[in-house]
Image (cartoon, rainbow, N blue to C red; front, side, top):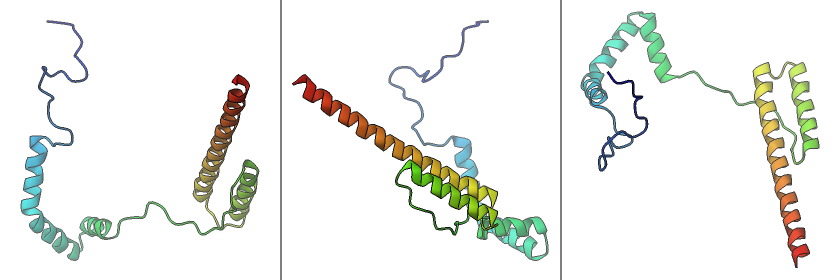
Length: 143
């Protein structure tokens, strides 16, 4: 028995790239074909059981027809954030809305994340401007 580790990556011989990217294996293709052939019968049976009062079938039907929303729009006017100082006003507005019970803690977390990303973008833009100015002044000094 060999204790050699398995070769990672593409262990195919030269000229054999393996299965194309995105292609599905044979078992998955067979299962999909079976599902396509009997989908109408399965759907009719689920509807029949759901209408007969089977709660799990009803839940399955409703989950497909009206899936639970992952997020709700937040109805709040956010102050414009053009510099890091503006972010302080935005955070204060968010905290005020939380204190008044308008926003939930999860919504506050989401909005705070937006404010944090805004600050990161502003800081990145400022760094790019400063680097450009330094490069320009360095180019003038080299002349």
